[in-house]
Image 1 (cartoon, rainbow, N blue to C red):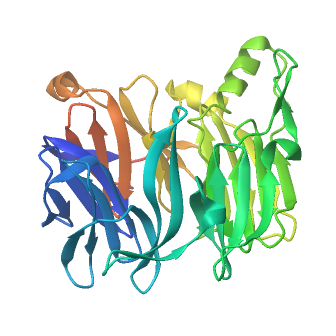
Image 2: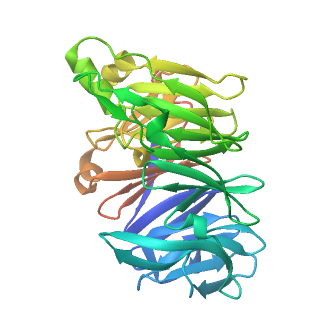
Length: 366
């Protein structure tokens, strides 16, 4: 179970990154492990890669904070997405809008001098999603993946995702081409892509070929079950990688699956948790409304009234915390949940951050 510790107001965003907590207030002050780090941060836009924190300031300008030098620098040339090595970052620059869409060039930015040191014409209008030792993996809209050489920027391969297959709507029986839903990342030279419609693709980063295609089992027959099954494949269904056990994990509504990457041929294990979830009258949705540690998956239920802990070994609900009394009256729409060590952090749309302490001795199924 958990016990409520305190409520902090005026919070724009909370993130746990590298086992550290980042709290950004709506006034632009960003705290790192309770110490003020930078000010004038647009509270919904910051991320950290390697030793660089990237963010947009209140004026919409792109900035970064270097943890090695404790310096904040305002970007002058493009948007640096993340560092690759030695204060060099892959970036998008010369942004312009035409034909109802954004266009940009791609290259390497020196974060110190703010000079573009290398241009990649073949990566025009493409965004970086992963890297290998010798190449960058990029994507364009929701249909194209490609790989370019780090050395000269020449294309190594290109993959049109719609050509790799289609999915069938279990209700209408209509066929729809595959489209990129979510890039999970590169694991053991395989780029894993969540197609959403019940399919995961494992693409060889050297050749662009689909090495693995994993599909969910067929939906149950009753129409209500089919409709709920379809909800599993909406955009909020985000598969994540757990490096400690080398598995891909996903929880949505009362469906759970994991992909074991320890095997030569990855396998998908699917669990229907309907009875357990219905017993406690909870459902899990939306990737930002769930998180996990070694023992549990924590999620905010769809009715916005409870925090739930699902045991990752037994797949039983260990506990359900309900907001009650005065606490329930002031809580808004629950937006985000994060976990770090023995603390749970829950943020609502009003800027209230509820902090809880875990008590693992109090479980419903003991």
